[in-house]
Image 1 (cartoon, rainbow, N blue to C red):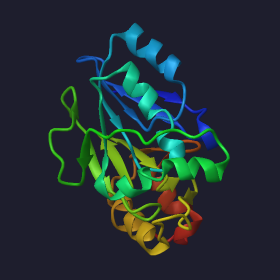
Image 2: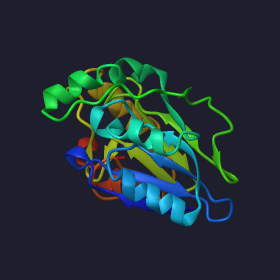
Image 3: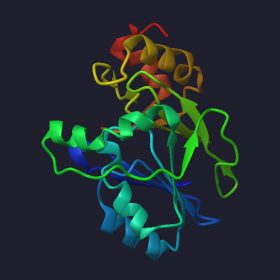
Length: 211
């Protein structure tokens, strides 16, 4: 699996483009910026963009979803149902953040941990529900790579003081779900540099270095 990183979204949010070199099927994880650049890359590589996957409904992670959907109308926009109310407030979120408002993106389908047949080529995309930063936050696991949205960062975690946030829930999500994964899983977060599960178990200050 190939990963192309576009790190220059609003508030430093990152867009990830992933694709399988054999089947040329691909997906976007969050959609924060770089629409024209991504369009050119996809077309140059002849990638069949199947999905636009949303980790959660905050404006900085969905800011360019509608524009990307216009470029690739066959790509399915997918997210967890529990964050639909948050997504519905995206115009208010933009106003509070002082950025140009966007309309509420249309969602083609809803995901949860029981979702099946989410694939790129022969590779399964596993949905992991990780509420805490928001009620419907999810991570996407593909082979040994985890796209963690705003749940887990390098030596940090997502803030829990926004609508739908809960420290006890994000603590459970990380300790009982993400930290149960193999230590060598590479974590690509919604903001900042990549890390690994093993590194965060040892060095993330929110967990007392005891996991």
